[in-house]
Length: 327
Image 1 (cartoon, one colour):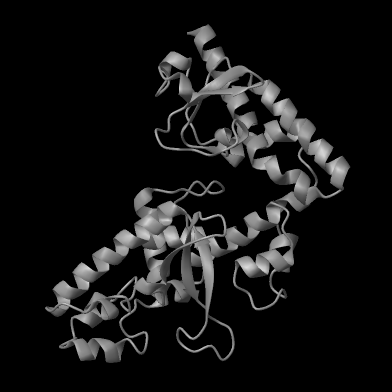
Image 2 (cartoon, rainbow, N blue to C red; image 1 turned 60 degrees about the horizontal axis):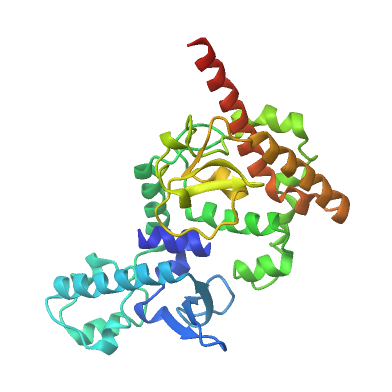
């Protein structure tokens, strides 16, 4: 789980993740005294960069930091169990965050551990990162929205998605290059040039036409609030313009700016009679306003996935009402 989460959160190359060590999990504070959580990410692919020769700090969430710390504790226990002896704290910090336990089984002494850690011998190979990524997707049963088949997941896919999302949110080549750890911007432009939002804008009719194919809506339609998970909890009610449109089935914290992100969330339970058409029209109007204001299709398309999701919900509601009327 830790490997999959750090991969999806950072978009880093597999070799960078394989080179991580326990001491790379950091916690500090900013000028306001607030805690910040970081990964000291090894560089890769830059010329003349030796094994763990250069680093760049990458900000992570507290949740990911906690998971990686749990992974670090697991690594220490696993390694010491495999080698058959305890390690000093200074040696523990040098352990790979994702170790190759088969290589550790060949270790006979603490000195041999130190000698082996001068190279990447005790780290999992980069290929294992990609293999783990695919195995996670297969076991989770994640399907492609386009083909309906099991997703052909790979570490590079996460990396490309990170760059593409940054482009969709309006960031330029310099920011994308920094985000993906590129040494220059010559390869960052591909993320901006190839995003789907650079084609003609979706209008209201096209949104409804494409909605069944996009499968952007990930939640579950419910007949009423009383039928929803957490339906008896008023705090779970999601509103748009003061009117209830659905229920959030998530018991954890969510900082999303409701209701727009809700339509693409697996925890969202839209109500059958919710005013989803109003939400849809407002999204279309906002898209047109942004396009007129900025002249930038990339910025105007930021909510296109939500538009498709709302259109999907509207169609599902219509079908369900028809079934109930004929039932």
